Image (cartoon, rainbow, N blue to C red):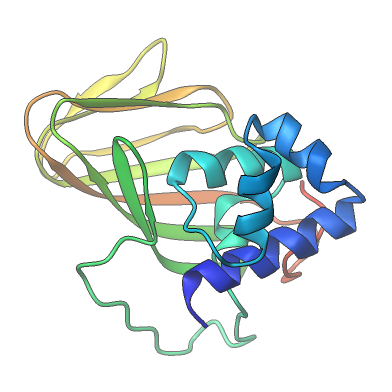
Length: 196
């Protein structure tokens, strides 16, 4: 199923489980009710910023809105081709590469592309979210908004994603791998499961 349909179905399912109206979710996410309706119907492509705002309101990880189903076998072969982003934003594009549940934790691996001259401040995620970055090309200023560090090719950073954090590409485009890890107390539950 194409991503726009998967995202729409997941948004509807999670909103329903949470018992929230379309109007309430749209208001809390600061988007138009018509926009949310089109997203849920699979008739509109979400931006990274919009989908992230909705994930925050619905109290689910971003990756939970991007996947259709998951195999129970964590050892299955997965192939993701380069060249496409799942979500494009004003400053950053991301592509979900893999999502697994291991030992009470959920891990999501993203390919991250930051445009030259861009700066994005991500609101803090839920508590106990760890973000890990490995820069492949370019220079990336990243980490907690109050104390970011400058990373170059081959540099790695791990930080608490529960606080506001920044991704900034001051000079050239940046390609990096982003790994997010968080507690998954409900095991391998799908969209609509309670957030940690």
